[in-house]
Amino acid sequence: MSVLIADSIRDTVTRALSMKASDVHFHTGYAPIVRVSGAMAPLGENKLTDQELRPQLMALLSDRERQVFKDVLDVDFTVELPGLARLRGNCFQGHQGINASFRILPPKPLTLEELGVPSHVEKFIEYHHGLVLITGPAGCGKSTTLAALVNLMNEKYAGRHILTLEDPIEVVHPHKKCLVNQRQVILHTTSYERAMRAALRESPDVIIIGEMRDAETISLALTASETGHLVIASMHTTDSIKSLSRIVDSFHPDKQPQIRTMLAESLQAVFSQLLLPCVDGQSRALAYELLFINPAVANMIREKKTFQIPSILQTGRAQGMMSLSQSIGDLVRSGKVSREVAKKFGDESYM
Image (tube, rainbow, N blue to C red):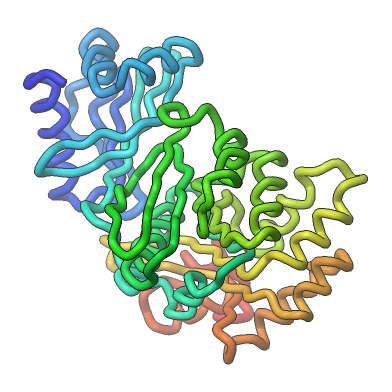
């Protein structure tokens, strides 16, 4: 990266950090844009041209990443700005020219407490096998929660081999008490599917999957969780029922009964998260759903009766369970989130 390019990117990211922004966008035909507390805001009025933006963005990519962009016109990557921030980026071709979106990553893994994640989630790292799902829409902090769990495990348990499969690697985890190997799609493996196949021969105790995207990856994750591995994976789904439906519906109807049985036997928990704008207009609060799989839930999954899961969530608070609507209702009653915002996301019966 040249000094000129580094200074240009650093200046914009420095301004974004001062505004506590979560994302920075560079789009041809527009001034740089930041996302603060979920809302977009332009930085100035100077519009970027493709001629000035393209060489800056290409300089951030490795040779392999530049080739991928040339072949398919978009690529995921990370970039380190020493002394400032680490960024997760996506560079893509738009109708006006080249564009890029960057997520500003924390300089070190945040703790579950710092993220506002309930303490019951710490139980996930105590499992020795099975499947745990971290779900939610894009931009709700799933990757940050995964990184917090990896870091907690790395600090607490000795002798585990943790293998992460990411696209791209966001938080770098040094070896502490665990052996941590991180693989990035494109740079270190061609796909999640291939990385999962290889993982079963790499003797991991824990497999972290940045995103379960297709039936083959899901099938391999279920197989790994049944054969003595702990698999923690993220999905772009909003709650427990939708997560289970997404997994089952990824397969041909003839295979779905078998997949439901595998899920019933291997799934340990589902944690769904959502970030809502706070009443102060300057921060966001975590709303969540937490489902632990007990024999009753496992039977519901096996018997295609997941529509009954909400009743388990409503009565399982003593065990740490929580429905998304209950969580949003708690945020409203605490004064953190307005009723108007809550109505867009939750069931008013709990507010």
